Image 1 (cartoon, rainbow, N blue to C red):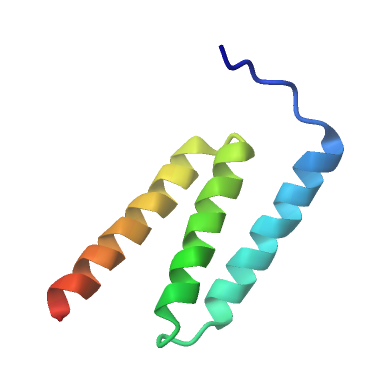
Image 2: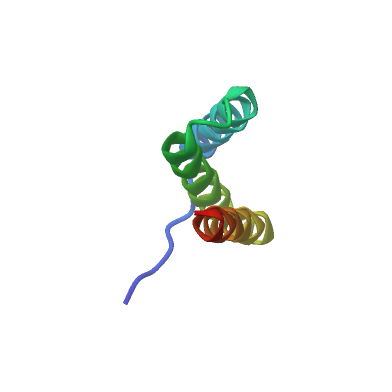
Length: 75
């Protein structure tokens, strides 16, 4: 059985910093960096999930999947 331990303030702050970094990097990224963009979006979704921001994590994951589907259908 998997139980959730309360998140310490330190871990919470680190996740917030990572999320901010990923958001900034994604905004600065050029459109030709598909693999890097995909990794950044996955990282954002994981950070949001661990921060308890479940709907945002789901929205981010759906955005990722939607873009992958569109890019594959364009080939």
